[in-house]
Image (cartoon, rainbow, N blue to C red; front, side, top):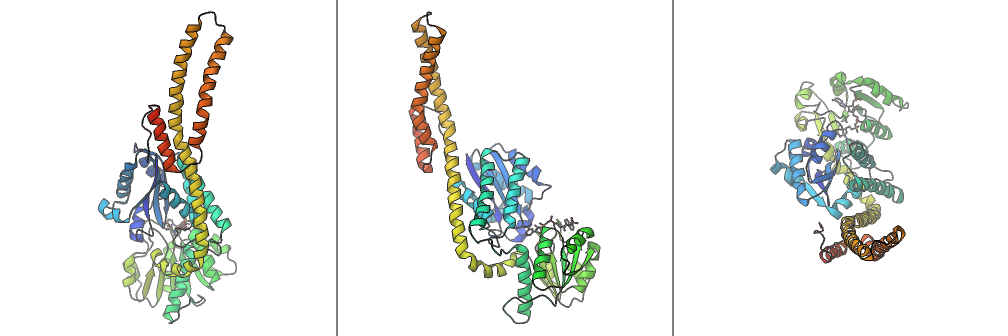
Length: 434
Ligand SMILES: NC(=O)c1ccc[n+]([C@@H]2O[C@H](COP(=O)([O-])OP(=O)(O)OC[C@H]3O[C@@H](n4cnc5c(N)ncnc54)[C@H](OP(=O)(O)O)[C@@H]3O)[C@@H](O)[C@H]2O)c1
């Protein structure tokens, strides 16, 4: 059996590729079904966030990664040759280590952010609900969740943690500062700000905007009632709430617009903004993936536009301070990955040991029959039972030591070699190694 992860992330693919691959809650069940329909895929789960699309799989055959890459190409509509340079494939220890790092927030664009742990938890829950994960992947996902929690409780990686939304607000502050020829982020008290989208990200945006001194705030949402409910949680701010149909009005009024909707197609395009001309000064910050704003809006006079990939500019500023904590977190991840591997490797011995026990049992039964027939018909039932128990007892005693050792902690390669030797000596079917 092989554990592998195939996918792409903010490290390997720009947002224009990532958005083509995102799998929504609605399409997740059918995607899982397609993956499990592949004969070599025994268990599968999907992690789809704004920064990554990763498929974790337990494979009967290592070559099945090619089939999964093909699935990704079909799903995104991107030809395999175009997709391939952005894909990464990690196997076994590396795949396990990667998932645990992801859950810990070590692979996030904003290191230590908390959203990813919630997303890994959701992946674990959906895997169970859709029965796409079983004993091995299910345990790995649970391990990832507990490693994510452990890193957050035993290190300060997540303390004062930044998130995509706080990074977007900080980028806005930085851009305002740069406009004034300053280097350090400035307050947003003078900005007319609109937030489009009032889900989880919208809420975080409002929190961070409030913390940075923003007072003139409008919430724009498809469902106005949801915007109003969000506004009620910030009584200290004078927030206006409008429906999406008023977006153009808000674009005219605002100096800064943040978009964070889960809409599948962009709502702000170059032609829409051109119809609003002249625009004096408008900064757009889009944290949606798929993007809510098309890249070509930057060509409109007076408009500056930024997407999630542009957040790298502020993220790098915060990353240095987290290096020491990240090192400690890496150590914890490594320990947990080793523990999982030890458990799994022990499990790999089970099929071989079962076959060995079956073979020895067959021999025992044959020899028992011979012995009983030699002893003649006068043997009582009790005596027969004693002889049978003796034969079983010998097998159990002989197997106890080797079974305990082969299932116990041992370096992976050594275990595989020893299992191979058992197979050869007892003429068992070939043991599968990775
Ligand atoms: N969650 C994260 O960690 C994270 C991080 C970075 C970026 N993002 C991205 O941010 C975006 C929002 O994520 P979220 O977690 O905040 O989602 P969410 O909690 O599900 O909220 C979705 C928001 O999008 C709106 N929406 C959905 N479909 C729409 C449509 N067709 N037209 C207009 N509005 C629509 C919803 O409006 P209603 O209230 O009317 O339903 C709601 O305001 C996504 O693109 C996501 O990829 C998420």
